[in-house]
Length: 210
Image (cartoon, rainbow, N blue to C red; front, side):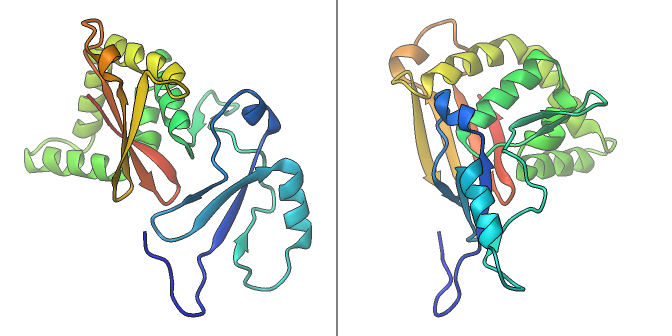
């Protein structure tokens, strides 16, 4: 990860985290460095309010949304649709599992799948002369076909992130994987064993499941 030199400083973006998340055992980091050099800091709602009150200047290094609320990985709208967000690996696992469970495949594709994955799939579909939604349709078909196996994997990982049954590996370049530990993965019941997570400017995204 490269940082600015000389007098330049990375822009700091603050996000409030509801107390119940940490109290409930959620692994929320203190800060995350985004690919563009910005530092995303997670603070309590009280700290966020204090920072907001103290903010001064026309072009501050600290970015605060005027109407920011506590970070919500899954936000249900009045029309029944959802807004998906992920800032830690557990959010990607939980949101993907919820989308598969509720058969929200299109929302999963459009909001949580990494942009690079979608772009490559859409380019391949275009090269084959398929219509504009072919890549999304193929993703939905994969979800329907592998829904049970993917849910089994994600359910185990949702518990395994805080234990030795899941292993997180950082591959550099904003790419990481979560894998079932060898002793768990060798079980015949798990046909899918790995989740790939990609870091993008607006948070973490799903890179793949295999």
